[in-house]
Image (cartoon, rainbow, N blue to C red; front, side, top):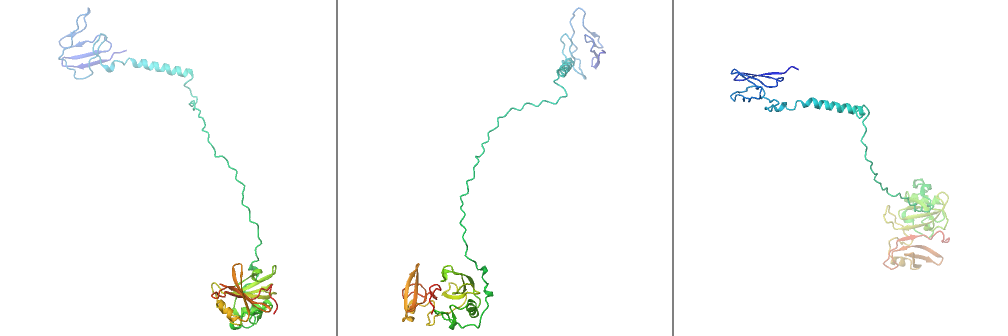
Amino acid sequence: MVGARAVVGTAAGTVTRTDDAPVARLETESGRVGNDDAGSDRSPPDTATNVADGPPPFSTDDGDETDPSQRFIWLIPALIGVAAVIVVALFGSGLLDSAEPVAAPVPATTPIPTTAAPSTTAAPSTTTQAPTTTAAPTTTTIPAPAAIDPVGDAIPMSSLTLRTAGIGPILIGDPAPDAIGRLVASLGRPEEIGVAGEGLGLCAGDDGRFVRWAGLTAVVSGTLEDGTFAGYRYMEPTVPTMHLDFSTPSGLRVGDPVSSLAEIYSSYQVDYVSDGGASLFRLSDADGLLLWGPVSSMEETGRVEGIHSPDACTSQDR
């Protein structure tokens, strides 16, 4: 191996260093300084010597001062060799090969028990279906008011008196088409047509119809096409929709005081009864009931609230 040579220029001369020389030699103009063969004392370098360039002097094996950066250079090849031996040993043992890396074992985890909500069995429905009730016949099968044709000429209101036998010249027992047709000709188109029953004076099980204008209700036994005029009920309407001014032949009107009722029919029998909490008057003669209706009170200060013909189920022929 060829030794490296470094030449350092100083004020005193030239310093030449060779790595393969066991002892450094200094060449100066004044002479040669070296190691004596018999262990002669080494002369220190001239303190006046000034190294301008290059690294500081290094020491030899006998203890001279060295460059710290060069102290462990000899260890590098040894460390590289040891690392190579370790790599070869690992490949030989099979730890370093091309096999897929083994995944690190995942620590087993104890599943957290989940408490599910207890299943609930739906309680059987306790809803009891309401019994089916037979609805009362509707008015859809009844001719509309416009389908009732007027019959004859209009009758003046003053002639449409509330009598035991009927309304003016319209008599109870007349055929329904004629009786209702004459009322249509006199009062105009009715407001409502419906099914009549016991509530309007017919006997239980009888088929009937009613035709209504404001407070006046005409009752028909049977159908409008082939039934008969069976009676009437006249009440003061809650909300008047047309002006009707009916009265009895003697002049009793709805709204008159009870005192007027007693005075007008002083020669007849007038009774006051209570029926289901309602106060009623009953006008009779020797042959039976003539007229009846509700009153607000049985006292003289009470008012007549309605005038009705006798019910068809209990009336007598007159």
